[in-house]
Amino acid sequence: MTHLIHFLRILTVLVLAVTFSTTSILAQTNSPDPLKIAMILWRGETRVEDGFRGFFADRGIPVDLQIYDVERDLSRIPGIIATLRKNPPDLVYTWGTGITSNVVGKYNQVDPDENITDLPVVFVMVSSPWKTGIAAPPGQSRPNITGATHIAPLPAQIQAIRAYRPMTKLGVVYNSGEDNSVSNVEELTALGTEMGFDVLAAPLGQNGDPSSSDIAPAVADLAKRGADILYIGPDNFIGTYRDALTDAGFDNGLAAFSATELEVRDGQAMLGLVSRYELVGRLAASKVEDILINGVSPVDIPIETLDRFSYLIRLSSARRLALYPPLSLLDYAEIIK
Image (cartoon, rainbow, N blue to C red):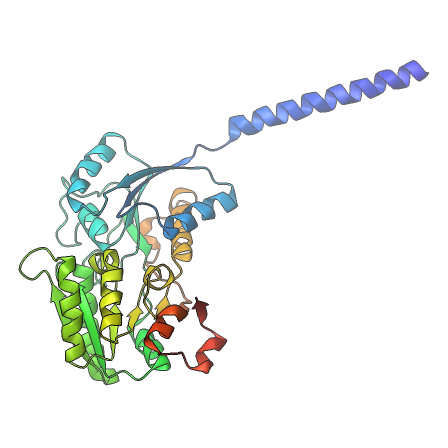
């Protein structure tokens, strides 16, 4: 009897082992192929891509991310598009207005030989997709494009500035060669008539490519013209040379407000009302999931931004300018030391 019990125990272990092994083999056999996503980036991976990766990791969805970094050089995009035509991914992810516009073209100027029209495209960090022609106007559509924008509504940005200190003159240094920046300044100027402030514009690059050496004189001129605060909008050039702008601001007693996160979190802008980059990446990833896993057409997925924004205050910049935040802001602002 003892031998029979021992035999049955060994048999049970063997059956469980075989069952486990078979289950593991079936799981490996049935595991989905990774989603093949080509990511065309402006300056390498950012916190946006961290959020994008994290979304799929949290859900156990395998992804094969193929990174194409243009290194701030849009002339590289035709070569990348040629590569993607030879080995098409499941989807193309684009970062920023310049890259996205070059990849997909403007809605009324699409060239199938130069732009991607036959693959789904999800963009991030495009501040004004309709104003810049990336998104089609109402009544028209672009069947392969959707994305996540990242800029808080302009009235909310102005209210955020005025919650910190009075403002009737907004100084804006921007790259006149970037559609997103031009559109942003135009919208601010129109808003100023409604909300009672003047935009003091300092466009760079009107006679060629902008130079970082032009930033400090532009800021000094804005200070002479009576600017209350500097505004950093969604501008790739200014983002690259953000320290030159904020340093010039310190020299002229001007704080900087930013519409994007990195200029406050990693730079020296004093305050901002921003989208968290990681959350923008997750929002974009949810759209990719809808397209590649749930079978939803991009045209049926809205272009949208986050529904909540973060108020950031960099205390070191406030201390340097002796412009300390009102106590009421400390109840909900994120303080960065």
